[in-house]
Length: 610
Image (cartoon, rainbow, N blue to C red; front, side):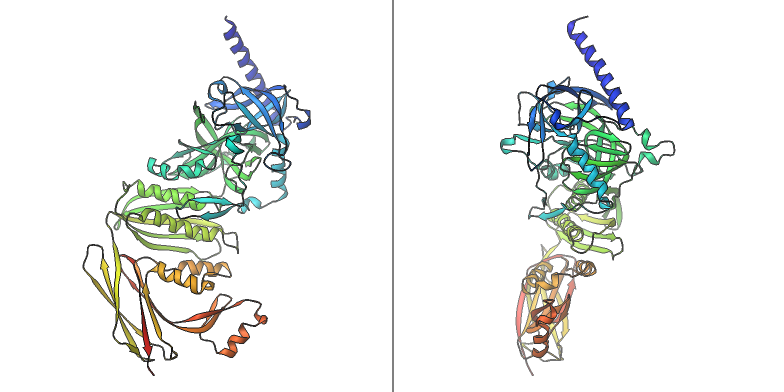
């Protein structure tokens, strides 16, 4: 037997022995820990991770030292040189996040960080186990937090529809990519390449590596421990096992893969660094299998699949993930029906996670995928959106709008995202979305029309008499459309000129936001939902008659045309700032429903005759 083969055999035997000892201790919850103060440069040990299938293999570490107060106060990272059969070829691999490291039979922590873009040798950063154990302590000291959305989950949208987490000081690495969290493989199944291309950068910016994968299904939502023949103790998830965190499951699947660091009974710690920066969570924790390791000079990656759910990830902390086995995650059931006219062409059912900064984006991606999957990759398109968002203990939110043109796809998904952002980020309650149901009708034509002009049947209006307004619309490549509306003039108008504004949903809404922003500042969740459900939509022409006048809004209720004496009292200190003056008295509003997305606006001024 050659020396190389003998060395390989010894290494294999050591790996098996280490794994058996570690697994036995894990099952007893008695694995000893090594204090950070006891670590010395030059100490050698081993780590556990899965590189193929579900078999836990061994790699080796040599301690180089400890970086103190890294990224923020009292946060330490242990530096170590890594080597082993897979690591020597591929370096520190995406998916190794959480791999437990042992020295002298004691758990040191989780391999969680890597160095540089193209390092000449694998150098990793280990999150000390004491910092990870603090996650479980924090979660257990705050019961019920996993049922609420994380404090870090706030969302900001820019004009491109991308999202950024606000309030989370993300660790993206020191200058020049010196030190960064190990990338997390994010497996997608049921998504076409165009959808992955649209959203891939958003995940990469957060330290994830989008890969093609599979796993999860709509009928596999029950956790393994609910099987009568299986207990929590029977779930084969040990230190070094591949573990999944699922974001979407069903007809479409998105799931991340990492490594279990520590298990004590039904408690699991993994990753060793943050995943979604979401704080409190409630998302499926699954078992996983690794198909192979894809070596890459810039970022080697484990290619794998998630399998059955075994519990829930309840806390996403700077030092890793905390979860419990046997606990079923709470996700949002979602259904998307694609129709061609009145005919149902395709239906998709899946679930998405409940997290402020992620739910709108994931819904955006799944809806985009369904539309792109119908072969409508670009060009002219008209999309009719109908839907319902069901919220526990509150009225449903209704989605109903029309979008047309080359930007119809981002327009419809932005509409859905904006509504969900308003609901999830509201300052009144932590909402529980029970379901999202959408129906999408998509055609390959452009249905748009512009407002060409407005005509009035008189130059002067008399209080109490009707005013006839004629609106001229010009469809795209179509004949002019003439619409007539008769509006009775109220008898209580003043002698000031009557203003008539005819325009689109966006033009009238933007004008109101500038002139009377208080109308868009609800004081409780019921008003917020009412405001969303009464929002203007794209396929209607809106007419608004108003005069400049003095009125106000008190606790969300509009009070127009107030006498000076009342206005003085309402604006005094006795109202504690709850009254806001409004300088526009709306006399009447009308709308014209069309089959087109409307653009343009027109204004007119009429004299009042007594």
